[in-house]
Length: 200
Image 1: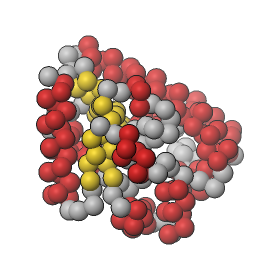
Image 2 (image 1 turned 120 degrees about the vertical axis):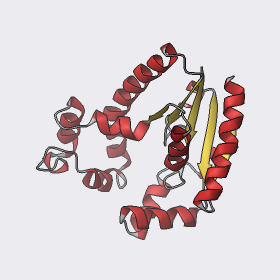
Image 3 (image 1 turned 60 degrees about the horizontal axis):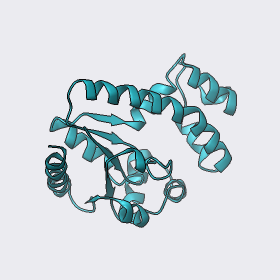
């Protein structure tokens, strides 16, 4: 079974590519979705995050206040590492279980959508790496428009990640997302055909 690592910096469009591939029938494991499950209401993960950062990061309805946590961790490298030490092991456990189920079910290819694939040293755990990229100014604008953040917050998010140029150099395939949604779909489809050929 071919394991594909799909990554890219914030607002590059990796989730859009994952959505296109999922519609084409590709099994996708999203690290973001698994991370949300790791801190769902009542979970040990959420209790540990509240212990680390205080009760104010949990809303009245028992859900994690992601905006509050984001404000803390993007200003404080040590805080970000403490958060990752809680979330990452649980994400890995859930992804490994999912991957094993896909393998038992006879899947020829699966995709792990992992924003921090390189930062967490996971590129060696996949067979192929696909990086989705877009120019920094395009990504900054997308962050501001889609997440309601300030320019400063957007830049801080971008600077917390490895340089996109380095990720491109280390990828097997690069999907450029500087144009329209239709252009992205065409590029994503081209890479998917190459991946399926390799898987078979």
